[in-house]
Image (cartoon, rainbow, N blue to C red; front, side, top):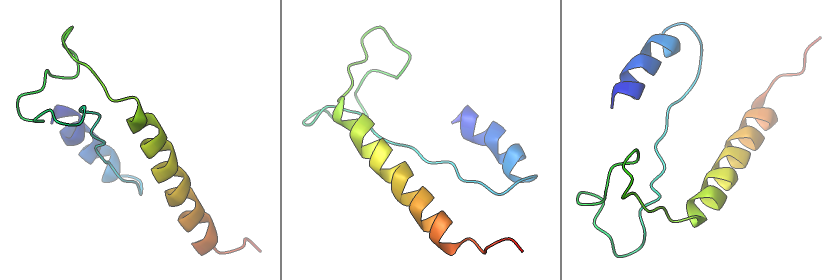
Length: 70
């Protein structure tokens, strides 16, 4: 993943995380699925909801552990 390699340089400077979220349709082997930037790529739109829930949970955990500023 070239993007993760580039993002590693950012993470050297600031706290953060990189994650991957699969949007391959059920029953399709991810290894044989068309690449993301292919005209043949077909995505499972439910991944948008999964991603939104994941990001909301990460934000909630981060906010609950944040120390109040003086």
